[in-house]
Length: 604
Image (cartoon, rainbow, N blue to C red):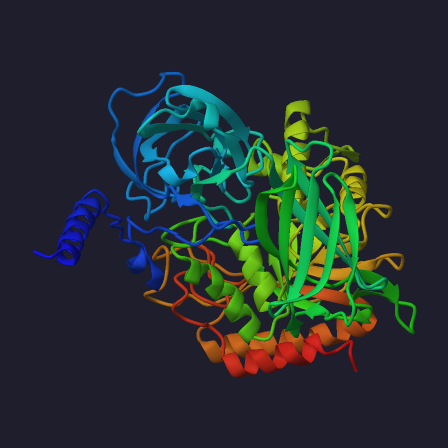
């Protein structure tokens, strides 16, 4: 047998063995991408496109797992295999078990550091782990991270040995028995509350770097001065280290700069090309770090010239502007859930699909609802060209506690540990997503779920990132002095119930037109929408009726609207698409035309 046939035969045998250990069987619906998931090549795309290096290694795939009572210690024997990065409760994990507050989830695998990385530091990255993760390398605890929605990393170089490396991760996740942000996860899913997501749910990977290396790149555009400000964070920098940046358009350098590490630079951009949903132009960035005259690190990324702001129109109504022009934002409430992967899309193509379909249906914005996506989702938004409102995932001791905001007219007091955790995770989310130009609005609270010190949190958010607008409480308890906008929710039809003349006024949620499509349901009964119809024509007729009503609210003061929702999710059947993404539930041409007319309403 020749070498090519031998390699092919070995791979086939290895793949068959892997599939034998992984069997994602379920009675529930699945997306078309679920069948494309291969344990040997899971979510293989580079996970951090805003700052990319040429060398890296993906650690996704089959790991050993065990569920033990909390405090029991590392298991001697594991329960079986789990497919990382799918949560243990998901179908695609191959396990589909609940964890609960009384248990801990243990992961184990081995890996080998490529010999070509000799002399480099090795960083171990986790895209996201829900909720508390403790990481061990070769039986040494290297770090802990609390927070289910943000990436974290450890320099594991001092703990590496010759040959195979042992990696163990311990996870504790109390879901709604804890105070941590968790979005819509609950132990007893029903109605608007969904299945828990515990453990590793985004890509795990390693990459080699020099001791001195680039740790973060944050570009911020100023289109009024035609400058791109770039902040480059350098790990282990010393006096004399220099950063060089090249800004490129289709491979041609159009601007460049050289500056000392630790300084922020303002780079003039001549013949500036603006980014918008209609023209999502991105400049490529090349960032190089030099120490002692030698190249230490080089990364690539991108940036966009765009501005989000507020200005009064000729009638004195405050409007959101994109690139100094009145711009009505219309988009769906996007929960980001999958019937097969829960929080995790089966493939990168699936992750991109929802964004592309949203834009094809005539929307120009997405509200990412009480969830944070992997970095690649935001890069897809940057490249496709769609605006993003980013929610902070809600949290608290229970859904009931979240909704109980006032007692005797006074704002509820959030326990100290819960408040400190909220502030830390919100800061990490903003730090994570600052480089993405598609994000134009931060939303710290939704419908008073865990809302506390609203004016203070909104002010901190605005001060920490003045380049975006702040929606302090979407549909929540409202404070006249907080944030840039007043956000009202009204179901099912759009209606103005409150106006603040000193803020931008938006309709943060409306719609919820329900249609249960047989054969595409998460559960056979107990499916609901805010209103229910029988077929696509009836749903489309109702949507167009709402679109006409929305035009009137725009004339009276609304500057954005969010329709509930992108897809069905578990028992909710008020999506534009079924949960498995196999059926568009409205008549697409009529929907697109209605959305186009709404989006253009302020440009006439």
